[in-house]
Structures are given as C-alpha cells and as structure tokens.
Image (cartoon, rainbow, N blue to C red):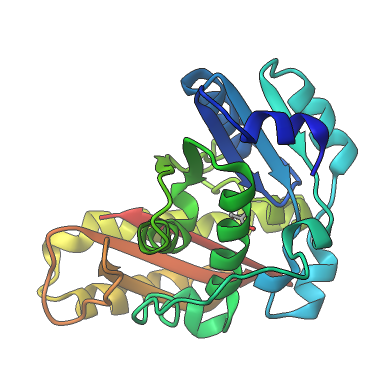
Length: 271
Ligand code: PAF
C-alpha cells in the first residue's frame, strides 16, 4: 500500500471518505469525489479494474483505461489521495475473504446475465474496506443493484462504513454517464438515449397500467422502436430487488440492460 494511505488508515481520528472506481473517470465519478471531499477531511479514490467482477474476458480487455487523465483530473481536489493498487495488494496470498449468501440478490437482474459479477464486487469492496477503513464510501445510483448489495454486505460484514448514495449523472440527452460510453460513437450515443426515454415512458405510464407486467410489455414495445438490442427490462421492489409482475409495490425501480453495438449499457429509475 502506498505510504500516504498507510498513514491515513492507521490510528486515524478524522473522517475519511472513499470513492472506489475502475478509472476512465467521468462527471459521475467527479460528483462522488467532490461530495466525499466536502464531507470528510480526506478522500481516497481508488483506480483498480477488478478482474474478479468480469464474467467476460473481452469486456475486461476492452474496459476503457485513461489513467493519466484520471490522475490529472483528481489533482485538482486538494484533499484527495489517489490509490492505484496492483492485484496483489488487493488480493494478497493471505486474503481471508469468505463469500456470503446474498439471498438471491446477486443472481437476479444483472446477476442473471453476469454470473459471479456481484460476488466479485463484494470481494473487492470487502478487501478495500479492510485496507482503508473509510468513514463513508460513495456509490452512484446508476448501479442500483450494486449499491443495494454493497449496503447489505457492509451490514453482514459489520463494517462501520456509511454507504452514501449519489444521484445518477446524465448527459443533456439523458444518457447516464458511464465509463463504457467512451466506447460509443456519436451516433451510438444518440441511439443509446432510448434507454433513458424508456425509463421515462415507464414512469409516466405506470398509472395507466393494471399490473407491472402490463407496463413492462408496453415498455418493451416502446424500447424496440429504437436500435439497441435489449437484454432485459424489469421492474422490481427497490430495496429487496424482488421482481414485481402482478402487484405494485410501494417503492419500485425500473431497470434496463441493452447492447448498443458491442457495448453493454445499464440504467435504472425509481418509478
Ligand atoms: O462500480 C464500479 O466501478 C465497480 O464495480 C467498483 C465499485 C469500483 C468495484 O470494483
């Protein structure tokens, strides 16, 4: 671990924020870092493309890497420490992580299409929290399933870290900021807006449908007018992530995963 980080994580008596990232930083990440920087005395931003959370080798290889630019951007934040570990620092030989039962939260929605992904996320966050012992850790709402799982696992592992939820940051078009957007052409970015439009469609049309299932079918028909290849549209209870079909729940989130060319995009919205 780098020296500065060792100093801040041992015998600490001040608040330390943590923003874990896989780099290719965009405005969404910067909002997390800025908030962490104002709410804590110092903030650690990690940049680590975690191989354990990729179920697809090509996706890992093609994940955008813009490390020099990332460092430059973070230099503007005075109380920020950039942590760029190697694989061995995060997964040492004496790694004592034990996987946990997420009671199905990791096998639905994204988990159905990306087997092992969330156990990989839980593992890396567990090891980061052990190293850094952050007071608060910041995550974007765009990965709402990841957020729900991190909240649950933080509780199971009994980490004292507060998990802070930050709003999804979007382009003016509505496209959610994502590192993967770097792989989209200008035309693909325009096509990808159908994801946001469909989420708005779902939110607006909820009141006209008898069941979530009916709404989902209408949303699929709307989505398919665009050019993307749909993987799923689901409506679920926001906290448990349980998919709702026949009955409305009090708090619901609609989520979409789709391919824009070769790039897999996800987004969600509370409805
Ligand atoms: O959301 C991400 O970028 C990653 O899943 C995270 C939280 C940095 C863990 O590798």
